[in-house]
Image 1 (cartoon, helix red, strand yellow):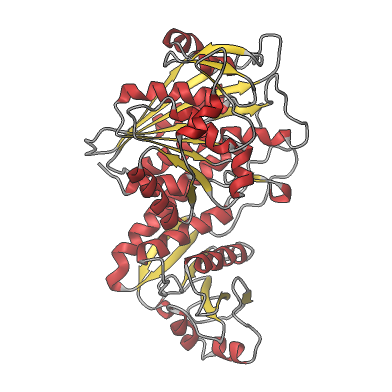
Image 2 (cartoon, helix red, strand yellow):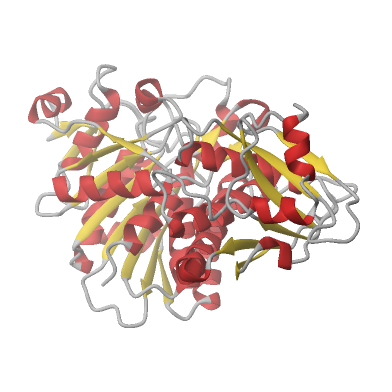
Length: 495
């Protein structure tokens, strides 16, 4: 799908589908009045007659309009003026995309993107258009015999802009398209079954990314190399699997980037049975999503490469499978991490932190200015925050505040949770430097506190995306989060 910014009144642009925003009470938003004028006031009459109330997310298609600016017009409800916000704007865009994709239109014109939104400037209004259309247009990779799904007809979406705002709109459309594409790739990787998306598959995906973009380099460390480095914690997770582990290093360096890198570390457990501490069978199929942190690193770097952003970013992806077998790590085993610290493994289902801690230690060789790890780490995070916010823990107020702000701007929000020495006490072990679990109380925080032990001297943040990375039920699948948050943050910290 292609996205374009277009200057000028909507009535001078012929389109298959003009998307017009209507507030409750019949007020047309943005360039909607120019479309209505070309239609002889038809939209205003429909609203006045009560045939379209303008409730948020409501849609009404006016087909077969013949000559004029549009072959068809899609009315989209924007809700009340009083409650108009970034959230309602994005919801209206989602409804618009869903309805437009059901029509045979090959191109569409969004005429309410130039309407004022209290907490979204011109750039973000345009960016949200591209992100929402790509999000709605996404189709899960289907592995089945028989007829393939019908291809979508919509191939071009244009966004109206005033001449003075055209530059910001073009930038928003460009960035949104890159973020949407990166998010879609994240979803593709996460939605694949675990017998396809193995650690080796992810390593090959990194190689493909490097071949597609000359600004990206990919290096893959084998099990032998990890053993030589002393990554006993990471390797303890993969001990029961027939799938070989991979440590994937993606280095993106945009043109003109001179600063030390920001390192992204993504949890890549391609399937998590829990190991010897076996999970309950119900919902275990969803453990293919336990590599969504890794997938988000792939997606973020893909977005940066598409934009040729002038920044230096390193992605580190420890990719493993956690399986029970005669060679699997057992509760009570003690392993030595790359940092030299010893860990008593009381629960083999607390495996994400065991691979991340060695990856965090490995990140030091890049002399990073900041390190951000991303992981579907704890069910406790889902209990605490549900599916709306990712959990954020950090040893740096500056880094935490930057991520919180990026989350608000991108509408991919996170919520800061505490890090404190009191929680560290719960990780005490009688037999090793510390244990890998600390009981049920404050589980999301104690998991972050475990990682905190490996970040001395690093400016570090942890994002627990267990509640936001995928949805369950009839609409089961990956969401693409937190790619928008990560890319927004990185674009705000170029160098």
